Image (tube, rainbow, N blue to C red):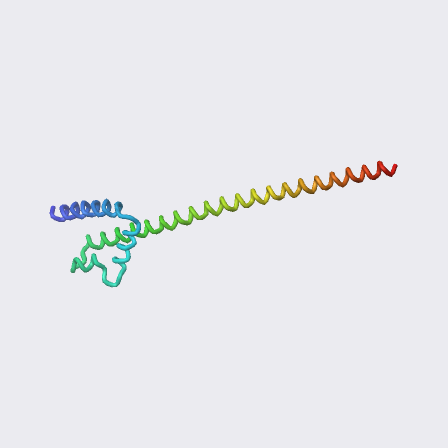
Amino acid sequence: MVQQTILIQERIIGHQLIEELLCLSVLQLCELLHQITSPRPILIQAVRRPGRLDLIINLVVVSLSLVSLVGLVGLVVSVGLILGLRFRLRLRLRLRGQLIHTLLDRVMVQQTILIQERIISHQLI
C-alpha cells in the first residue's frame, strides 16, 4: 500500500513537472538542460541521495529539452528550405522570363532580316 502511494505521488509530481516544463520557453529549457548537464547539476545538488524520482525527473527534463531543441532545429531548417525553394523558384522564373525575351528578340531579329532580304531582293528584281 505504501509503495502504491509512493508510485501515485511520483506520477502526480511527474505530471505536474511535465505541465510546468511545457509552459517553459525554448530558451528556458536550454538553460535548464545546461544546468542539468553541467558538472554539478542543481537538481542533484538539491537532493543528496539520488532516488528513482530524481532520475525520472532528470530524464524527463533532458528528453523534453532535447525534443524542444530538435524541434527548434527542425523548424529553422524547414523555414530555410522553404525560403531557399522560393528563391530558386523565383530565380528560375526570372531566368525563364529572360530566356523567353531573348528568344523573342532573336525571332524579331530573324523576322527583320527576312523582311529586309525580301525588300532587297524585290528591289533587285
